Amino acid sequence: MVSINRQCKDNKGGIDKIYLFKHQNYLRSQIILNDNILVTYPDTIIYEFEVNNQPNANQTNQENEGGKFFDLSINFDLSAELGKEYSYMLGFDFNIIIKDRNGKYRFLGNRNGLTCSDVKYTTGGSKNSLNGVSLSFNGMEEKEAWYINNLNDVGFIISTQNYRITQSGEFRITQNNNFRITQ
Image 1 (cartoon, rainbow, N blue to C red):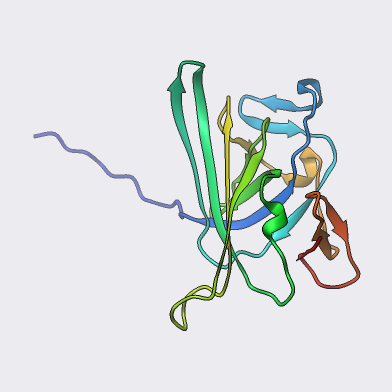
Image 2: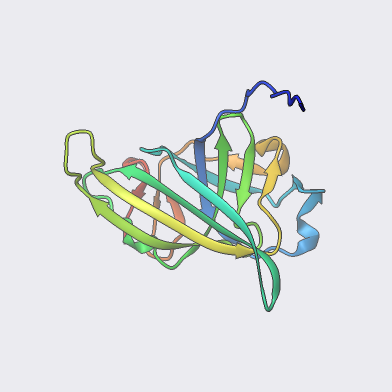
């Protein structure tokens, strides 16, 4: 009889925070990696989003006639707020950084970005259902999502100001209406 020892499970599943910013095509020389850990990235302002559900991020290693690649997807919900419009995000490429409940950061859409593929508004069917918007992002990458040890050390600056997303997919600073998305 073979005995197998089970290790203590100290990993927590789920995503704690989501940071979103518009994808830029940087030269490979502007981005420094140590194995699969991002060390340096051009200075970039990132925007923190408060999510309403348990976001679901997946990366699947696949192969086709072009070779191996990673298929990435993330879905999350935002609470509905009066006057906010999210449909302008459709078709634009974004980068998303997630912080999991273990304190680890992952950079999704590192070279090609993730395209906002679905914006779904719902009022829910019961009192505990979502009254808000569900966003879906998809993309393909040659390499798996990068890890990040510290956002500031790499070159990311978390915006502390109110902002809006314009029709062109750009983030703009506003005086009020935090997270406002408009034409």
